[in-house]
Image (cartoon, rainbow, N blue to C red; front, side, top):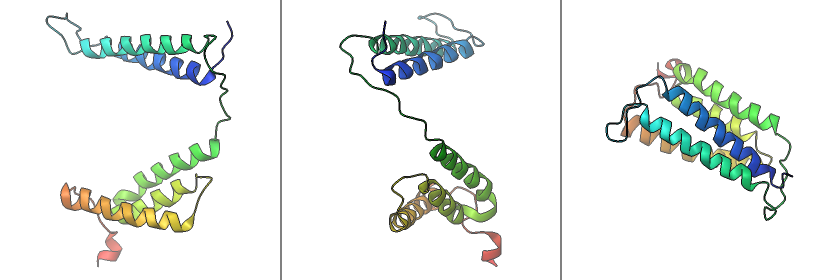
Length: 153
């Protein structure tokens, strides 16, 4: 059988993998029965359904009616920049506060885009800063620095 749609094949394999992992990890809990479900029942059933769905998607990628699709090359630069942005945010948040940490996060992750625009990034930064401040600092009253300590003195 020839694979016609590589997107569907890899998506199906990913679903199968996650489903099998969920089912395997759920085995450390008591499963029970449909009438008296244990804590492992739902993850086991959900993992099984995910694996079945993945099998159907992967099988559909080989059907004659599937449209041809190839997987593009992996954009390693983009992956590294986004992961770096998240790591920098995690490192900076307790030291620099949410405002400067979000600026670092937004600008570093924006560099991963092929359509990077300084003006658009500044607009997104201002919007996300205001929204994050209102939601996390004022709304949820989360206890972390807004600004770095050296700016607060």
